[in-house]
Length: 139
Image: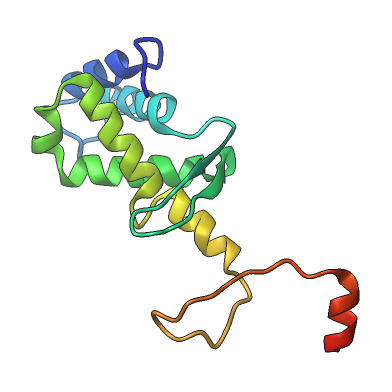
């Protein structure tokens, strides 16, 4: 998934350089930018959130959410993540940024459900394509 040109080494170096994630510093700013450049969505991709059956479309519009989700996870799991090789670090943070409960794919999935009401927890929803003239028959 990641190549050496995707900024994974810069991300690992920035994490090593930033010794305290809770203190504002130039090193923390560089880590933030390395994280943004490495794990945030560029373009348009389809991602399946954890626990979902179907993939959803994620665009650069969700990159701010991805960055915040990845950084929050990094802060909360700092000691574990500092031990990972750079490829594993980038892969883990990308997965969290996109597939995790607070990530972009879950947000995109939620956006697609906007306007759906009166559906009980755990109830299934099926989306079907209807022709315009069928809508007129319902009304």
